[in-house]
Length: 241
Picture 1 (cartoon, rainbow, N blue to C red):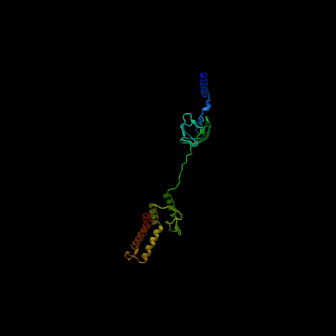
Picture 2: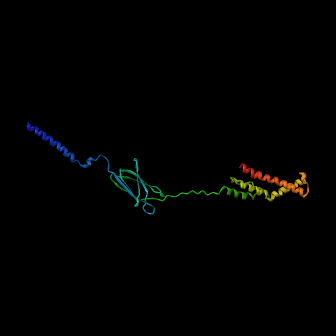
Picture 3: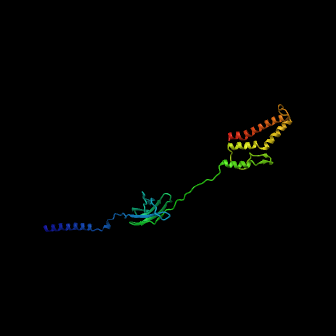
C-alpha cells in the first residue's frame, strides 16, 4: 500500500513538471496579443531648385485617427516619423512662401516607408490693381467738352452734358463753369442788347438817356445776369449738392 501511494505522488509530480516544461517552450510568436508591429516613415523636402528645404513643416495624419504628428525639417531637409501604426496616411508639407504639398500612402505592418522627394512650389503672388481715373479728373474732361457746346454755334450751352452717367462737379468746378459763362463774349453781347432795348423804351427813366443812361442800364442788367449765373449755377448747387 505504501508503495502504491508513493507511485501516485511521483506520477502527479511528473505531470505537473511536464506541463510547466511545455509552457516554457511555447514559441514567442504564439504570445502576440494581436497588435501589429509599428512602422517608420521618412523623406526629404526640396525646393524648385533642388536644394533642401530647411524649416518646412511636415504633418502626418492617419485616416480616422488623431492626433496628428508634426516634424520640422532640419539642415538636410529630411523628416521622419517613428512608431507609426499601419494603414493609410496623409502627409502635408508647408513652408512660408511655398504652396502646400500633400502626399498619401499606406504603411504596412512594420514597414520602413521612404517617401519620394517632396518638391515645394513657390506660392503664386496675386496682386489686385484697380486702375481708375479720379472723379474730379473725369468731370474736368467732360467740362472741357461742354465748353465747346453752343446753340446755333453762338449761344453758350455749357451746362448740358450728353454723357449718360456724367461725373458730378465739385464746388470749385461749378464756380469755374459759372465764371466761363459770365465772361463769355456772347453773355456780354446779350447784356448789351437788353440794356439797349431798355434804353429805347426809356425803361427805368431815372437813368436818363445818352451814353450815361445806357451805361447805368448796362451795369444793372449785367449785375442781374451775374447774380443769376452764380446763384443759380454755382452757389445754390454747391450748398444743396
